[in-house]
Length: 452
Image (cartoon, rainbow, N blue to C red; front, side, top):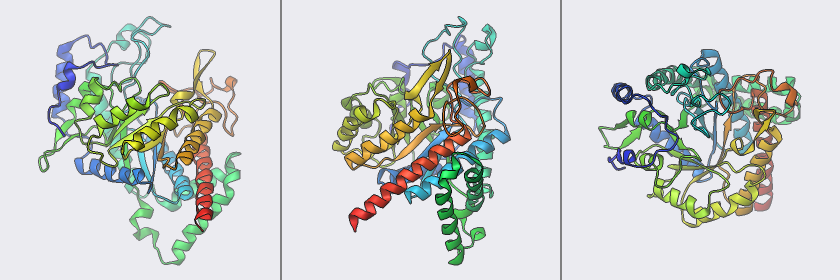
């Protein structure tokens, strides 16, 4: 990777706050630059290796978490519940796909958000751009972009990351415990009862391992998991300040997280975000919307992964349920024809946002339809549907319509708690995971039938 890390400063940088005090910004940058990294280079390389397995069709990627983390919600219970939901989803998907699931949380850094306008139409105030920039409270002082908040975001991320590591390795992620949580979901949830057969099959698999003498207390893979962190690399000063050169290799990594992604609004080929992230060694994601052309996407893949390294680049399709079946195939075909070993992931959230009486929401049926459309496209092309990218929470919120709980428009005001975009609640997230697992299981059975 090139060490010329500051070329981005001469390029258009979209979605950056209008920092009112450049001295404050310089002080925050200097403070962040002197702080320890949040993750390590070997961990980053491990994720690249795991994503290379996904690119080869040997694993599946599950990426999920909050739309926008907030400092106030950075509590032990809420972090635990998000991790728990991801682990539960991963068990179902692992069984359905019969392959390892690479677990990447949107956590410990998702404190900045792109916005449609600098000024919020309803208040006339600067738009809320995430807790790393300003405060959601609707007054002029709170909405003033404050660079010191990036330093606060670093410390909040460090706290969250410490808990994530503890939950992933300290027995919380024990496979038998996670399966018991899923059994409770199957037993108690209206959605879960249809997955009883799958839960029984998983139970049998665990019993078979025990009968073979596999002791869960002595098998690390059954008692702990790898869980990686990710966030949108939006705030250029923050990402640059936490970028480090590894002494032993000379490689450059953005050590604010294991994986960084570029949003649909900042993926300009000649923009600051693409240039900067093309120069770091992390796995990079790039959101791709329905207006992206095949040629544009190929140009992005060549810019972000010129050496064709498997696991380096994940293309995250966010087409919308009505467009995915038409817009995605030519892009996949063009990228694959160019020989790029990318991970194909589906973000079924952002293309399906709707407004209900001034409230931003999504419908579970649209989310599910886009996921199934994504799988249908890959089946038709003979390519690997590599993963899911989901905005979710471990809380019982009422932000997305539908699902087995049949959340209706009148229910949105019950627990609408997101700081930005609506998230699947834990029941909807698990329902999605089990439905996808069923689909993967059926596809596997069909492949086995054809190969006999």
